[in-house]
Amino acid sequence: MRILIITGDFGGEGRNPWLLDDLAVAFADAGDDVDVLAYDTKRGRAFGLNPYPDKRIRVFGAGPLKIRHGGTGNLLNYLAAGWRLHTHGFRMVRRRQYDLCIYTSIGILSWWLPARLQRAGIVRRTLFVLWDFFPIHQLQIGRIKHSALHAPLRLLEGLAMRSADAIAVMSPANQRYLHTYHPHVHVRTIIIVPPWASDPGPVASDGLHRRQRFTVVFGGQLVAGRGIDTLLRAARLLQDQAVPMECLIIGDGPERARLMAFAVDIGVTNTTFMGRLHREEYRNVLQSAHVGIAITVPGVTPPTFPSKIGEYCASGIPVIVCVEETSDAGKIVEASGAGIGVLAGDDTRLAAAMETLYLEHLRGELSSRADMARALFDTVLSVKQAAEKIRSVAQER
Image 1 (cartoon, rainbow, N blue to C red):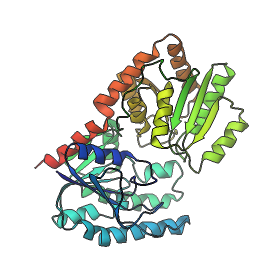
Image 2 (spheres, rainbow, N blue to C red):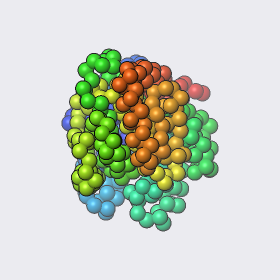
Image 3 (cartoon, rainbow, N blue to C red):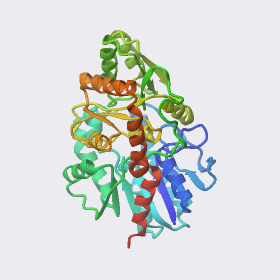
């Protein structure tokens, strides 16, 4: 099978691999021929064929060569990416034929190239992976400031979806919200594919290679909408209760300085900001910890399913899912026995959930949750499972 991935974010030299890197490797492992058109608008990348660690995967740079900054600069980056996708990018793939083309939210940023490739007979079927309900989510967490942009951006995003043969959503809650938020998107095939993770290899059993002090971990970008303020307040509550725990916050981003200052202001001493780590370092930290935290902010209507849930489960650590009321991610994790779900913004219940798992750790019961977390990864959240579901789209007639 020949597969084309069109994305603004992909790995390579000096870059951490990401969800789509893992998916491309899973396709290659299944014997598929994989090409990637990458239109990076944040860091840029070399034009044409790029070096990539896995030689089975061809990565073509088709985005802006000069990265501009600021609001106007970002707009110019997006416009340059669209122009290059439809000129240089199209020429890079026009002599090939693909069974499946995959593109993801934000769909507008693919500039309708998947539909053009399908009309030209280069692509047989297309799949849109819906990770992010744009623009409503960005408006509600404050990344988009002007509400007047909502209606036109929503219309354009819906048009980007409507041309797909199939849409992959993260959970049943996401499927329901899709029908509400985009009532004019009538795509025949909708499949449920939670954000996946790759297999980090053998996971140590509980008690081996774990830190002596009970440790919870958050890993992710430190940007708006992450809910780290709630986590810091919960950590302070446990500090006041003399619960011997440590919280590690791994990642970087524009919110890091503010969050570190907030931690100082509220007197948190049991929390460490570790900065951004390469994937192998990050996974080593995860396997030395006891619990992973997936957290968002309240007041958000579109349901989210944090991708870090899969990463925690792959590393065999239980998960506390602290997400908005509309999400079913916490219910899915709780039903599997792999962790605890609480509502976003509730620092008291988040602290109670951490204390519950700490007490289970003291009683030697946390290892069973760790086993269930790994089982959830193997049966639902692994990239192998995701690749099989996505490949089935190309096999439809």
